[in-house]
Figure 1 (tube, rainbow, N blue to C red):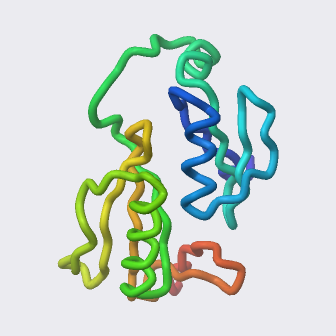
Figure 2 (figure 1 turned 180 degrees about the horizontal axis):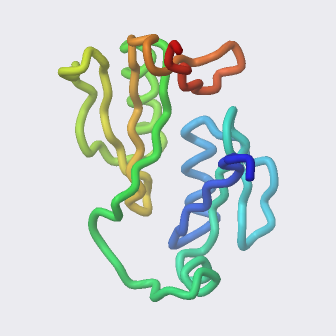
Length: 146
């Protein structure tokens, strides 16, 4: 099977409120079907779906708070772009979890939480050895030299 991440669905408490937030953060609300909203990215589509409905669809209990063991990330071309995007997300209604800082591995990143607590890392990785952003804005993993 070809490994392709095509859709990331976030369980949200209020679909309309979450869609408004993501639109303010710069996403395009491409398809709003009321109970689910689809937002295109340069990679997989981001979908917003009711928290309880998503849990029911997966066959799990909807209860659960705190760290969920998952973060989403937006990789950008410079530390300045990280600062600009971080500020834009804050203005859109995100909560700062960790302000952007220089990292020991040479990059620069910060963490925000959307209104439902989903963690997003806004990052710049200056190394081209492992990954890079291509002309289409997609993150590419560099193949090791044989």
